[in-house]
Length: 261
Length: 315
Image (cartoon, rainbow over all chains, first blue to last red; front, side, top):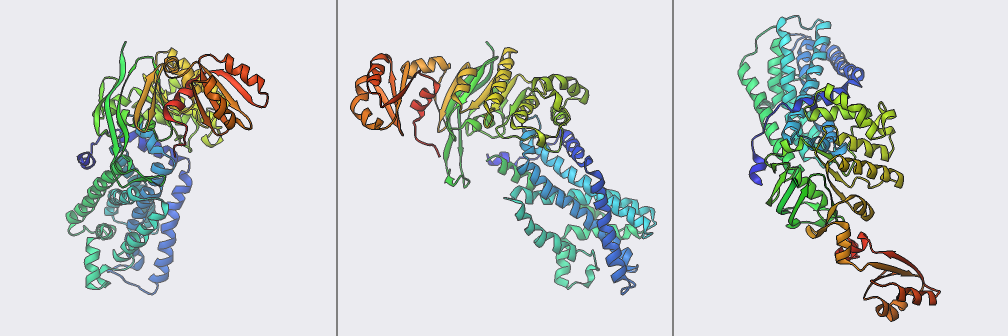
């Protein structure tokens, strides 16, 4: 029994019809969803960017608004994937019993977990794209390298979807997710260099920041928006990929355990 | 005859820490040495009180949980090793509705068909037939929350048929439905067996089992305690006639007289169930005692069920 719980994931293309199901649900409220993806970053960037930016003319060698833009795109994609994996994932698993219906077909739990991660990452991609459009429209980046933020949004989405699903697999109810937001997501946002450079933190916290996935995402996004190639690019990508694999496998084992009872 | 489902010496126990409805189930045997064999075209029933292991048996057969020991073969595939392949040819009506509330009736069928790898064209060509079967042709574009309980159940049945399965599992298909809705479901299930489909259904409605099932098994606390056709079970386990006596002072009457007329009787609340092969002497006696009311009827499956599983509540 133990060995089956820990078995390596069995991957197939059967996740596609589930992804299409989620897309069909999303389509019915696409307009609201896209407006949300656009409004949130605009409000943050204009509010904080112009407000704080007027007092802080320079940060990290650019205007504060440009500095904030890179952070905003990363935390928006993180939030999109996290919300989808936690709240919507839990609704599909627990409340609506969508997973139960799907598991009675040839589709397996492994396929479902893959589909949840890919779907949440798809929403991150959309969210990242929305912020990028705002960045371009505000003239905050004109480099061709900024296009690399599109695949980066997908990678950040995969990473935080996979990590978020660990919480979904453990959650007794929606209230449980508050712990994750308070203890993980909010500190991550404050420590990873979204609003100010990590170098401003005391050395101890800089070490913590160095292991957080969001820092690595921002270390990739900020130079790319400014038209520069990031240093240690491979390291940052590997860290994000490693978190994705860790989250996928851990959540899969936990879901197997949860649903076998 | 072709055997489509065969199960040998199935065992399953919940080992752990998980508690259900306040009770601890540590090491509790949920399935205890169940063997059965179901033929093509048969309607086979699993009967038992709550917690008897009916739903667990279905989940084991579908390969959704692993048995502790025993072998399962579904449509020629060993389970759980080839469960996904076997499920291609199986339809499932679950106990609780899990239709997609965001979709219309037709979209529910379309989305579900895709899970079986069907193309949209294949599904669309089956849609009119499925909607007709479920009496939902006029509700094609209705959203799920607007449907009645009976309509949802019929749609769930139609959804289970989207892949034209050979075997259909039904977990309490008529629980919570009004009599009209139940009769319509029963009629549809008989049509399916007439088409040669194999049905495996769980229920705790005895009339449902008696009407629909060719053969059935009675489960109690994970064990199979009887298995046969409804008629044979009644003949084997119970006297042919039942006289239910009720009214004031019925317990006092039973203590004094019941044994004289009925070789076996049971007192349950304010009713005395007298099981007799020849009812006339008892009926004559009761007619002379006008203060007692009674009901004379042939023995049915419920009498067998209560004899085998007892009358006390299972909670």
